[in-house]
Image (cartoon, rainbow, N blue to C red; front, side, top):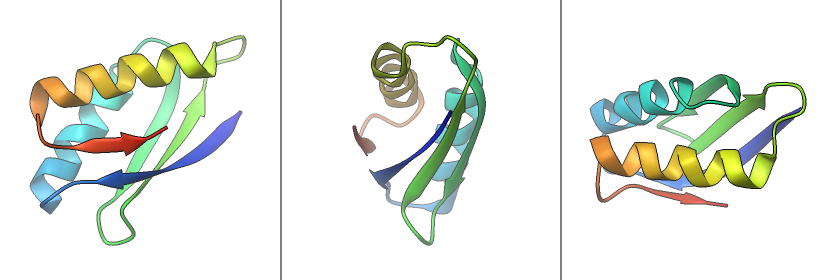
Length: 72
């Protein structure tokens, strides 16, 4: 399953950090952050609970960029 989320991030480097953190999150097959469009495309692993995975993605992204936001 793939979903797109609106994000709020200040710079391209921060967006790259968010992408790396999202890709390291359990349940995420692949995440791509587009800084110019301010969106994150997330492909989830089969059987993953999307809501729980996205809470963990946000938590992991906040660890590397504390002022970022993902509108879940």
